[in-house]
Image (cartoon, rainbow, N blue to C red; front, top):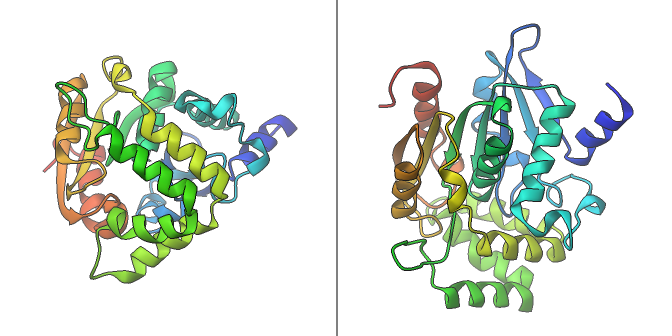
Length: 277
């Protein structure tokens, strides 16, 4: 591996586990806002027998190189994060990967797959949202003033905001350890980077990309998610050329943490069977 490739992988804190050798397929996991690759600990190990498992942190999150986060240029849009993802796949010489992305990372994956479809064979989008703000004919879940207030609260008291948003995102009042885990993940994130990335996330609009994605896609949606409501999942499913949607009976925006077995079941049927049940 060349020094330049090593630096790309170190920059995104790439970790590799699971199967190896000629013909081994790769599955790549990418986390959403406020998280890091640790978010996949209840799901990713299940694939290590059959796949090379690739975990990475978004630049600016987890143990990535925070100095590589460029708010005024590269990371001012989701396109920059998609290019980071493609850089990792290129450095590892990966094609035909299964991509699993959560929330905003799902849409980062969509952008990447539209740009370089040969890198991807299947997509799993968990609680995705191409647009969080309601518009005429589109229900994203938030009014513009809601997003403005959310971002203002982050700006005024990031730690306080982290403690307030985590129960909403996790939706697990009966599972306080998951709420605490998400809170701590937010708190560990550099506040200035988190606030900038939240602004990029909540003002993003990737709806136009959906019509160009032809790769088989599974949408996994929580039944009760205030961040990405069911209407958003149905919208994405209708826009994609080859997709199916599974609704998991759980609360919150992170079904891979709140309902990992149901998430794994949906993924297994999509990846290894003809139909999703």
